[in-house]
Amino acid sequence: MSPTATKDIGWIIKEDFSDTEAFWLKKKGGNWATGIARGAYFMTVAVPNVEITSSKSWLKLADVRVIADVYKQNGKGYWGISCRETAAGSYYTIFITSAGEYGWGETRGGKVDLNILGSSDKILTGQQEVNQIIAECRGGKLTLYVNGEFIFRQTVEGIGPGFVGMMAGTQYDQDNITVFFDNLEIWGPLQDE
Image (tube, rainbow, N blue to C red):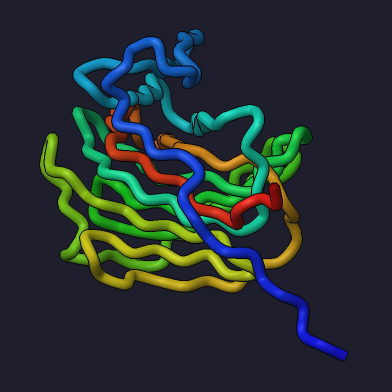
């Protein structure tokens, strides 16, 4: 018996959002908006208790690493990446907050469950202060690095392969948030040719 070979990991998407026509969700709803402006991808949530995600409809992965430079334009809330999103709307999130906190979330059946694990002085909280986030959904683990520093690793169960992308949200006492994502890289297993 021989061991099973693992697939090489490589980048699948590198996006600097310099092309305003790039194929990313650019839409506006009653309480949210997404689009490309100022050479970055923005996500706005305009009311409390709303979370939005944006991903490529063809990019479905179980194991993924996402790197992005992200800053808050205004408001209070949380932002980061979503992974393993299913057609039924179940997914995980790895996020940081406008208060310098970090954590992970799980959405199942329309119910968002946020788990704030702590705070870190490595997370910059000022308006337009850029945080580089590196978030991984690999195997049964969610991992976050911010500005080059390891922040947390959490064991989770349940959701298999799914869509991966960016996310932003507000909680009950947060009226709105606008965040900008730039220099997005999505890494995953390279496909067989």
